[in-house]
Length: 223
Image (cartoon, rainbow, N blue to C red; front, side, top):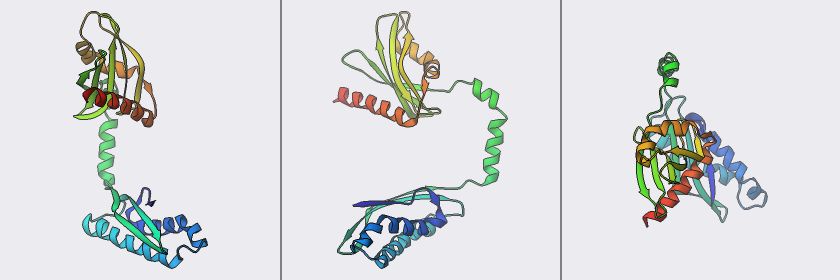
């Protein structure tokens, strides 16, 4: 099967994008005689009709809204068949300019205070591994946005590594947590903002790789 994706596009332009994309994907198939331009036009009209019912009739799209549609299809015996069970639609509602401007003005007027204020991270301890590593989820407004693994070296120090996705993607490769005889939970709860501030700013893809590794350890230890 082949997947067709519109990419992010204004809601009113999806029909033309689907038609052009489908013709581009099947250009070589047309040359080989596996499918005709007429069949591509027919299939484009079919999927566009279905999307119209979703986007216009059901979601009541407005000018400026953005969508991204993805669906798989097969070409068999000269006919294009859409696999509707693979249809995925992302929909982004446009916020009025006045509302956006108010939000911008509100934040800009408090830039200094916002930058000085520490991000209110919360920690959720997940488990302690068989090797004594402490694993935590990092949360922001009840959303899990990162994870940490803390490895105590002795009563005075621990090694910390992990990553966080928001508000800025950051990776902690091998940080140091000074314990001074206190528990990891206590010290980390007090210093989480400083720990993350000392991390390295990276692309979000790198953060996701680190978090995937942490989650794999959690699943392995929990099984």
